Length: 178
Image 1 (spheres, rainbow, N blue to C red):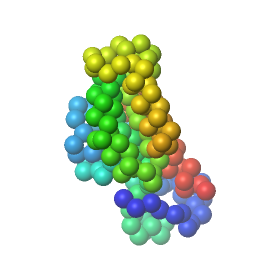
Image 2 (spheres, one colour):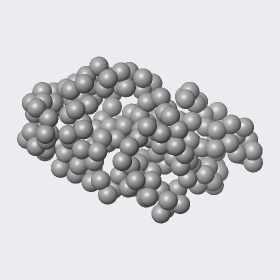
Image 3 (cartoon, helix red, strand yellow):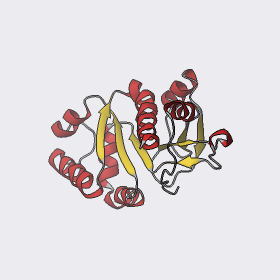
Image 4 (cartoon, one colour):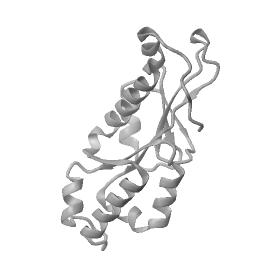
């Protein structure tokens, strides 16, 4: 997906219309995400499953002839989801694979979402199955965040669908406004 440069000035009404058509993207390789797709179905949020170059989730605005948008608008942003601190530790321990994902996302707004509302505490206290030392895990995560300019959010699994949708909704709204 190529980054877009907004060359239009949309009215608030047009922005609202565009955002109402926003489609969530779900990486076709994403596993165990039924709680997220069920949220989207329940809220009537359109989504498509397709192979993404990086991250597990994205969003786009479909073409809209009425507003002069000839093609779908893809935004350079992605969210990588980890279902637990265990998965996070396992991913970071496999440094080359994890870093390769970050390198592929370097031109986009990237967020790491960990489904564990006490995740930061669990990470720092070593409350996970991996043999990866807590201090080393924290150091690696914070180094990657600094090096690749992303942030990590720890949330309750039941809020993941809501978080994903609103993250993209407001980021895209902001892009369309300015």
